[in-house]
Image 1 (cartoon, rainbow, N blue to C red):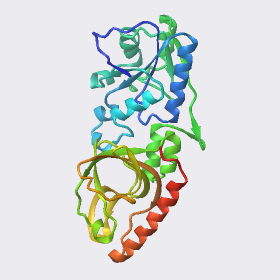
Image 2 (cartoon, helix red, strand yellow):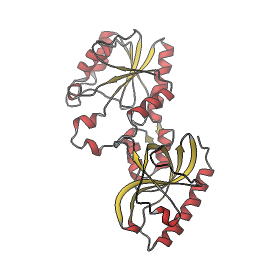
Image 3 (cartoon, rainbow, N blue to C red):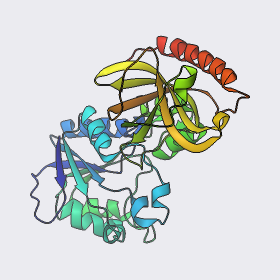
Image 4 (cartoon, helix red, strand yellow):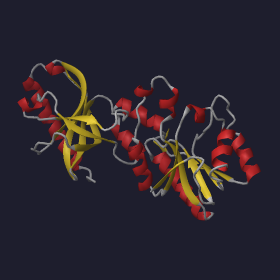
Length: 313
């Protein structure tokens, strides 16, 4: 994949058809837009290009930036776009100055001035430019005056939901990981480095590994216990993930930890990827360690049954 940083010194070939967005999640709605983009590119012999931003607008414009989590890191987003057949991405450094531009000014400066586009694909409910100025409809005036075509892709609907990054965040917050995965078109995942925790799990026969996320802005699902697929050193394993506290042991710090089934080895310091398959239950406080151990045995059997029904990729 070619990733271009958009600036005044860039030189781009003629004949571009572009679409613009953050593409957080690169979900089924995005996939529909990307397929439409490639279809129109082939129909009119144009070069398909995705225009995106290196930072989410919320992280630049809001005071609660750290509280707003992302579905994908920048690296994940690039990889997913490439997986969907996008070879050229133009990345804009999102700044307050960029945010202040109206749709008209942004289009004149970037879409026409630097990229000289021949066509623009708009997704469902897709808008860009300063919302306070609210001149998005002028994009059609620009298209007519500067002779570039505008195509509109329809939304992707799943169970009466118009799939969007916002809807996926809502489902993650609710712990509905199966709905999340259906809207994404792939298993939601997070990666990080294995670090040492309190090692309580070892004392009850369920050793766990604490995970420090590779990017602190990555969003995790609602607290609870999840059936997962673990990728470690290129091999896949069945796992149980615990997101939350350990109230049975009076530990109320939220952690992200996993127990890898049928695995024994020292993996501290190694990188790991966790794919979330299904939420099993809430975090609970048990009367004693024995009761917790009995519940974990039940959880393990559930995980085995759940993963047994799917194909591990």
